Image 1: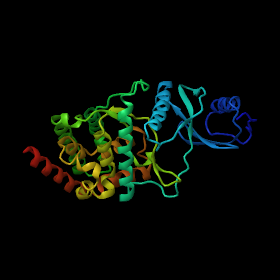
Image 2: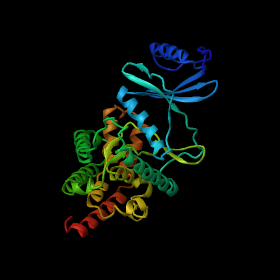
Image 3: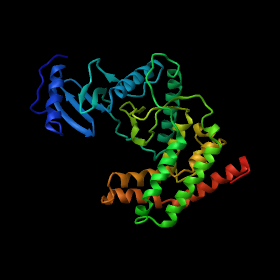
Image 4: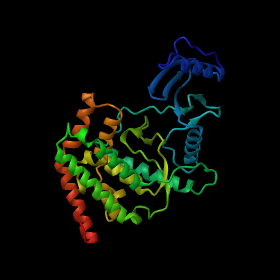
Length: 336
């Protein structure tokens, strides 16, 4: 791979110190660079004469090593639907971030979204395959890297408290009765999940993905669906990923409980009271408004409109879904 580096056309955006050091690093490792594009913060696309790579920065050397080891072991346990880390060379370090080469996966012309049953079903199948592999990795002594134990209820409490603290700002855009209803649902869900916490953690831990948003599923050129971005992995039972996935797809299925229970991955969970309470937690409303305020995005009309739609449109369907959850829980436990 030792070739001359061509730096004239390789001008990534960013500060000059980063650019200078990056190009020197690439030259030292023999990369013949044609072009470098910044994809998002700490992620670059590097094109050489021979190949295209992603170049991603991790907030610590430990995170870099952990994800590199995980993706390698995933393949050894039969899970191939993710990218590979490339080259056994020292990562590039800049301002506390450690950058490594990741396989470039050419995307399919059909972008993955949760708006079709086909995509939702494929996403759930990939999650199931992942959990089967990571359950085995949990017992593999080669994976000795520390990863956090996930605490779902603590996460919900933090998200609800943050939303309550900014609710006076949200009230400038959303009817107060919608805000109060969402807060009530949040408190109801946390209280119920806490009472049935044993059902939340009754399965053995696996390594969960932790961020099963649609943009972390990638349909590659072959048509297969892959999982990417392992920044939020944790030790938890599979229900944690499934709960997040269910919450993510509910707007796409118009809060249809009939469709939700039609997916095989959820059928075994429809009688789990902790899962039902978790479905009632309006995580998307809290998450998105908290982010708008935290990241000072309230001046952006496009951001406001998107989150307003998520909150207000379909609210009647959300109410009906909540009533269904309460009825199921009352039938199972004798309480609402």
